[in-house]
Each structure stands twice: as C-alpha cells, then as structure tokens.
Image (cartoon, rainbow, N blue to C red; front, side, top):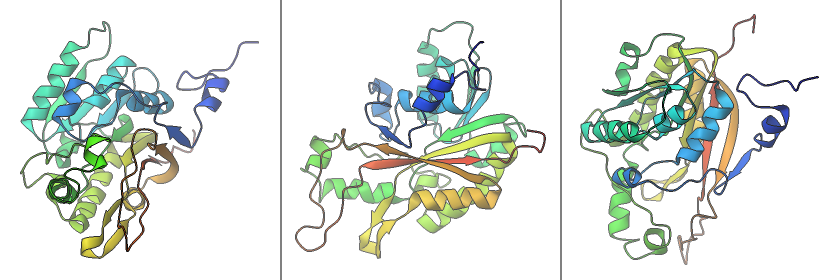
Length: 283
C-alpha cells in the first residue's frame, strides 16, 4: 500500500516533522545574499521556502504585496510556484527583477514583479486566484524612530555590531505604509486585508511575518503587533488559523535594555500569523 501524499506533496512523516509551533533560526536560515543588504529588513529564502512548501502545491499562485527585493518570488520560483509581487519603489523593483533574472532554473513558472501601490492589488490579481499570500509589512513609522535610536542610544552597542542590525527607511513616498502613524497604518492594513481576502482562493492562506514592538517614549511599552495584524485579517473575513514562533535567540546577542530602573526582555522572536479564508462547503 502506497503512502498517502498531502495536497502540498508532503508525506505524513514530513507533515508531522514540519508541524512544530516553534521554528529555530537554524531551521529557517540561509545565507544573506548581497541584495538583502540593499533593503535592511528581509527574511531568508529558507523561511519563505518552508512556508510555501507547507501551504501550496506546484503551480499555485503566491502573492507578496510588500515585495521588497523579491525573496518571496525567489522561493516561489525555486519550488515551481507562480508568483506576483507588488513593490512601491522603483529601486527595489529593479533589484527584484535583477535577482529573479539570475535564477537559472528552467521550465519554471514566470514570476511577475509589479511596480505599484499595494492598495491597487485588485487591478493586478484575479479574484479567488491566490493560494497563499506571504509577506512582511513595514512597521508603520517605527523605522524612522529606529534609525534615530541606532544613531544615539545604540550607536556603539551590540545591537549594531554583534547582531549586525541594519535599519533603513525605504523611501519618502507618502503612500508607503512605513511612513504612516501606527493607528493609520493598522487602518490601511485592514483595507488591504479585504483586497487580499477577495484575491485568495477559498481555503487559501494569508501569512504575515511580524515582530512585536516597543514605543515607551510615547506611552506604549509593548505593542502586540502580531495580534493587531491577526484582528485586521479577521475583520476582513479570514479565520485566525495558526501562530508560529520564529525563535531568533541563536542569531541575536542580548543587549542591555532599561537598565538600571526598568527591566525589559529582549524581543528575539518573530511571529508568523497564519490566516485562512474559509473553504467552500464541499471542501
């Protein structure tokens, strides 16, 4: 009797092995490529490949509305999935196209890079066509605060030198989600979630890579970013399907926070918020 294979090509043994709720840095790390350094906030190809393996089959359409330098599409191409990425800034569009052009795999689906505002997603993606969305959004205007923080508080700290933490503002376009105050950012995310919902196949997934934040200077010692993202997806019609912890303690040294008066833990983990569009009754 042959072993049954899952929709994504995984055997029962592989399916079980990959079902851990905590992923270590070693499991989803791959070498930082030269193009990652041009952006300042990227995830690894290995992380994107694991997600795409779990939630898609060959030939499925993968969407990334915040494409950056194209890591999601590189992973999709490696795994013979189709891909559409939307990116606001021309410099990153050119870089993504360059990177994808260097991929030498033959007979693989073409990846499509679109220079546009993600709010126009419905103009580029057919309804009910996307199997998974996989993306990491900008963190509202926190990145500007982080740039200042690196220049002052952490200019010579281990955060910069040991952790090789690089923070760059993507650009100054007013449409950039990374230039919005947090409350407005969440409102825009909610609107985008509605568009993603309509673009997603019944039973398809919507996975966001996000890290919780702090803004103590403005009275917010802890911002549960992953919950806000999940709730935005739920309001759009998605079900909160799963939550994965990406443990990054192996990659990041501990730094001194709040000493000597207020104790804070180092946030050395990231979440993968997994949302799912309800399947049809026949599925």
